[in-house]
Length: 280
Image (cartoon, rainbow, N blue to C red; front, side, top):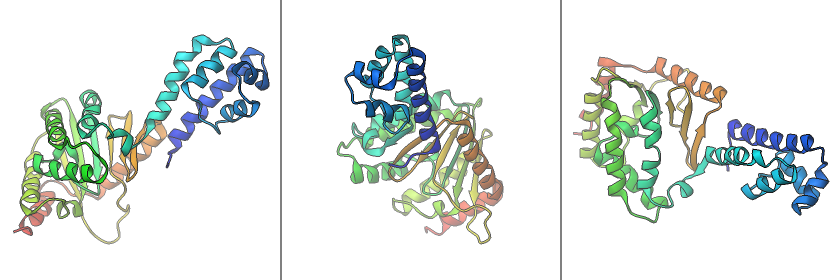
């Protein structure tokens, strides 16, 4: 399972805190192991970050070190580490509707959205038909529950944030997105016309990165930046959440570079219209 430096660093910070509890208690690792009923090697692996502790491990560790007051905070830290990387199978095992609903609080508290996509039109800009094709493809590939219709409804309702004038949106798509789609020509045409409409809203910027030689930055994985606090990255195998400022900054810099390469306004509209006309 791939991990980012954020995940690795957060896991190591948790290990460091557990090791400090042992030091502050005046105990040795083998004594903690004995109190917990473990082999000494387990304490060593957890304290050095080589083994991820369970919630029960943390509770036993804190009790052995006489630091029960630290338990809740350390368990919360463990859950945060585990939440950074989520396989699609785990996220979607209860169906696509719940997966869509899970991000609603994040969208509702965000006021500055930046989204880049090299695969498909970002969800906030999708038509219902386009969304249905995308989610249906996901459902057929990896989800046993068929609640696509409900998931489409949730995603459409989420788009109400676009009409909140206090929020800002910057969308970037590769030009290839305009001519690639899972649906038929009618669905893609409707989607391109949607892009032409939302691009006129005063709080929304839609940029298209033209297909050309001598690029300064090649296409990357699709990602969202929520304010300056969080990045969500969609990978083939799972969903990555980044909150480490250095990594959020890396994605912000990448977005800025791609934004400088994009075209906007009439030039972007011309590319969208060209793609739409090619479908006729």
